[in-house]
Length: 280
Image (cartoon, rainbow, N blue to C red):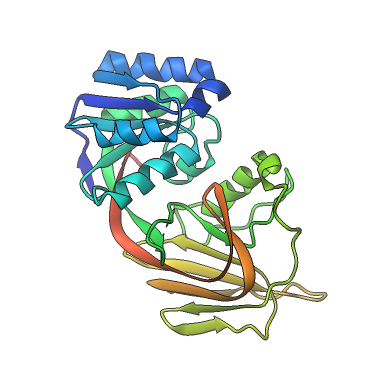
């Protein structure tokens, strides 16, 4: 469902990392947004000022200028404050654009800024973990394996959401942040979807992928460990996904978390709004 993003009062929050990564794209975004709307610019020095600016937005529509981490931070803050459902977010991706692009946001600063001004609000599903604080906008991966640049991209699980290809770009673009993550190895995990087992701990797996789909349903892919011929992926879909077993780390969008022994994610249908191009 889409509705017009009618407010012409914007709060443009420019993430510090964006200013360091690509000052020219930040300048372009500011110019386009200021020319097309009444925009109040905010340049926080860190996460605390970022959170304070978002909390004091008033009637202004928030626009995040930054990478996937900045967008996830904004969604997480609004979710924790119970304000996510009533706040339409916009983003101009600067730096790592993979997450925003996977959600339908244009990659270029000019196109993304114009989408902020002329786009429509679209309701999107959200994965929330059992702690209640962790959110997943685009994709979840266990284990968070670094991907070599130039590696072939698998076919997306669902049409219209090339999340896996974008995840590959994200991982390939940030090798330094993954230096502390163990090398790939077989994991013994039990994966349940809506309480039904997809794989048990007695069957080693190479990878588990989860992505919010549509209508409150998550798509799950489990790749069993194979010797010789590639094993057929196990596919499932449902409202909750629980993973248990030996300690494991996971990548939720751009952040690596863990280790944990058990984690459950549930889908919140239409939990948040993102302003996207009208023809998306």
